[in-house]
View 1 (spheres, rainbow, N blue to C red):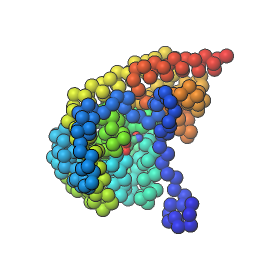
View 2 (cartoon, rainbow, N blue to C red):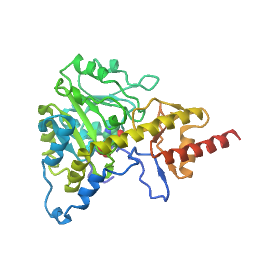
View 3 (cartoon, rainbow, N blue to C red):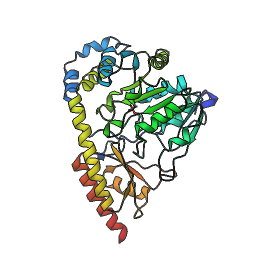
View 4 (cartoon, helix red, strand yellow):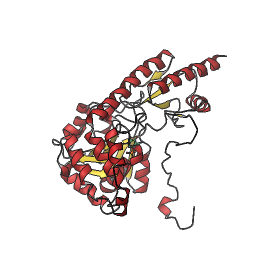
Length: 353
Ligand code: PMP
């Protein structure tokens, strides 16, 4: 740390992203990326692009992408804002609406970090003993509520009706639903947007649209909320989506068929993999996401993570309570999951000896 750092940041703990190692033949199941490539339409649009166009700034309004996203979600253009990944959208939300904010104590690791960066009065609300979010615990909070649905890293989803109750209970507070993983089988709150002007939905192209490397996120909500988000964007980074991201994202969101096919394949693999893990004696939380959260009495979460890594399979372990027994496993292709199951059987056999 230099002597120039602002005092308020001296003790700040930054977010730790999952590793992106360069190990050959690694089966990478640690950062919830999609195992399938981006839409062929996105790849085609990018390869047809004249790279010399990069001499110019991108469209600060990202209007091609906004038009396509509005069309996809059945919203007006002024109900959509774009971010450099949904991380940036979340940052804008904290900047704009985060004076007093709460989130589940076990959830996306960035939520408390943003609270530190932007000096928010933040409250972490514990999960239930079975690692669920109980909406009743949020009913009386009088600030902005942010909930990932499905939650990460548990994968457990709330129903749209449960979230609607929160929205209805007190319309003087904003409810932000982070739908990073919703497309793999949970209920989106987008259909509630026209009914509730205290709802903001956050979406990303990093998971269900296979474009983690392009960094594209969306905010969807009432026009007044989107205006506030854009006030932050244009005060911070007006060209937040680069030209290539706008091109890839626009083509990807227009290709509904490919998107639905990939999400369906991932969800089917998740169900098959969950059943096999349960046969091996794992307890797997009921996931609607593209990952599962699993534990067993036969080996600790940390040891299981380490032994998988030694065999070139990377999953995610969080060394904190109450989730240190668990590992989070991203759903990959069927063959990746079969390999993981075979290796797991080997590891469990070694434990018994
Ligand atoms: N929300 C949740 C719940 C996430 O898990 C992630 C990614 N790990 C994000 C948001 C951010 O995703 P991105 O910035 O890639 O859109």
